[in-house]
Length: 430
Image (cartoon, rainbow, N blue to C red; front, top):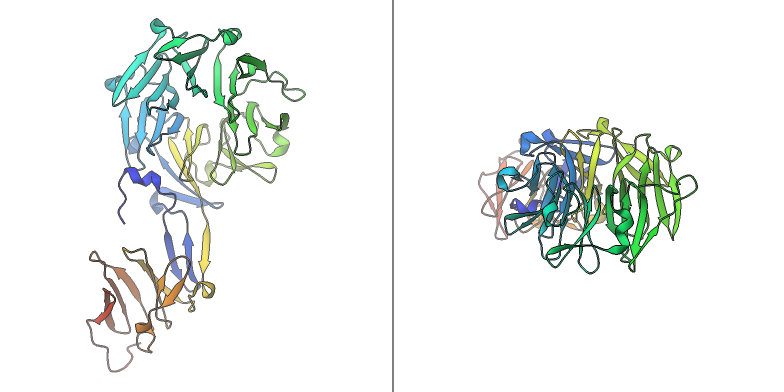
């Protein structure tokens, strides 16, 4: 099977089949050995400027509906298809190189918040920019989101703006946020917009702006990042060694006793399996499990410990943007052993191949050739005889045929028929 560049991101896992003396094992995550590190049950791969990334600080990330991954860096915008980067910078019409925020609207337009260049929109390959002269309150755009009525919310270094029907509009209830630096905008599943600024954490719903009161000691906290998980819990990083979690309307707190590092958490994401991930400032990556945070740091394969952005894509990958070490992709490794329960009765596996129809072929020493899938295997009857039972190697050809060698002969399986090309010797050669 040949994957197009675009379809690379659409595939959740690549099958890796490992043959050995103890049967057959399948891993649900595999990347080229020269570019990967796997420890602690994870596989990590990294990309930087040498691979085409415009700059190694990845501040924000977004996966659009067509599967592409978009990266905001200090050196411009990049679209990634899993193989190569397409860069949008000053030459392509971006008003400022540092990209701070990204958002895709219901029409498929990509909105880009820049540092010093205002708000840009990429649509049909064309970049249009809107700035202070158009009604934007500040040229530094820090956060982007949309509400249930499809109004675009724009967080800036001087408050919140709204974009509706092709122009900037004001919401009187947001007046108290004017002049405040907006860190995060998040629309939750109830339709409430959460706004974190230097003035604290606020909830906007039903036309009213309400102050969110945190737990004792952190009543007026401002969040560096926010996440709503699949259960509707709201996670907020509020400073060094502090992450708050709001469950059923009540805030709880995690700190160093819960496994968090002293440096504050810069980004939060939820993995496809429900794992909560936290990227920290200079202390690497953490995951939440059994009511505690656990570290996955540079020593275990990440290209850098200063995490600036996290994204869990629709295919189950976790993408990690760093301050100076580029982009990382993390996939949880899972190994499954196949044996008698799946019909693979012989444990001495020598080789494995896959034909174009998706069938897996397993060659054994003394047990013949098996054909099947990840669910069930069956021996190929033509290899049951004493002479054919030893399969040294298996290979698929471009014409869809399968070749295998063993016991001094070469065989081909094509269109459901077996053929041999070297006559077997009169006595066993082994």
